[in-house]
Image (cartoon, rainbow over all chains, first blue to last red; front, side):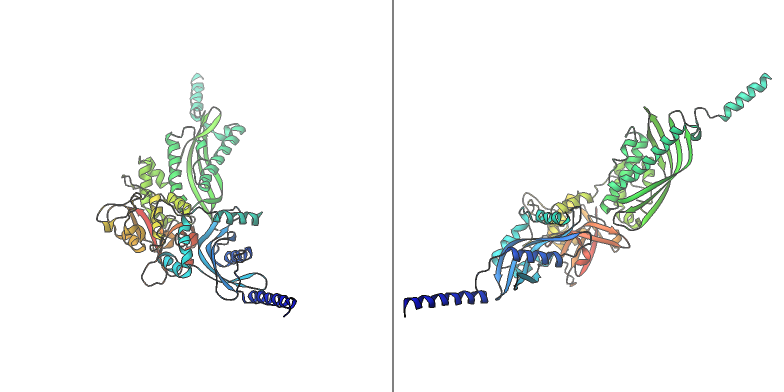
Length: 162
Length: 364
């Protein structure tokens, strides 16, 4: 086999491998702004029962992502959803650990499901089943940390009402 | 002739009140000034119920320590103390003053009038009207009018007149928690119906402080306390902290099963501090000091600072505690709560699944 032919074959094989991995989704998918936007858009419309006093906004602090199948991923994080009125006053809100199931589409991602821990006595039990072990401690520590989650929600509201 | 002249003079003197004459005899400027002052006074009086403080009323009294001023300011303050935790603020209002009689002396005016206030409570749709007969005494000082006294029929005013101290009256009023709330309906917001108050003082549950604490720490936990998220949930620990912030004293009386406390130094605590059912049992059955709970069968009896517990599966195991942070009183009471695990702010309790029990809080 000539060297030229060998090179051609190598290029062809490399290209096929790249195409194969792209199609099967075997490559590592980093958490992207596109994913975050899809999740926040979903959360702001699906999670909080609103009071009809303002618009609803969501912000996510990302903790981790796992692959469920070829085009389906689980995203873990802490999410705050708040209904904010025109005077930029929070009128209703929730802030909690979440697991989102997202599916890659031709353009972008779509959230197809979400899981939250139940309240009260079932909270810790549910977190242990919903959130992978490597993220659990971070989620338990989260409420005692100073975060800018609420500020980011208010920034969104400010931009919305401007 | 001389006799008749003297007689006529005496009769004339008797028919003219000395130093006092109807306002109609006063100059048009005085009339307008007094009417405008009275209108402004009543506007300010009801503005207090819109703002939630008595500052609009204070400038109308020259000496806030005078008997008349104290009666009105303290009376308004007690009414506000009762209204603010229940979110019973005026949204908008208008006052019409109907004058019965106005007597003008050299530097003082005594007015009897009927003031009709139309108001709508914040978040309420219905416009209510309330009328009161007032005897208003005004005094002029350095060319400016001030209110000397404003007397009208009012149970709390009656207690003030009877010489009870304001702290006694407030303690009494707030111990009447349920009847007070029960009596409240739109258009009927009398604070109490009896003037037979007790004379002993009591610590009062400061619902405003409890709610302020609940709002401050709903999403960021107070690091002074253990976070019980991993230890069965932090919800009851959070509502216990709120009660403590509302001046509810720790209860170290009796045996440990009937206590309620948290030691910030050692981080030791009683089960009633952290457990949904233990807190409930403590609130219902403790017989000594500390907070006391009663089950409210009617949501209209619930005010900010009270508690809600939930049994999600309706299996008899109560799972969750939350504190009431907002109530809209309409045809029924729409109750919103703050909670930990999961963290919620102004969350409508109807969105929680399962059975709920409403617990009215007082201090034993």
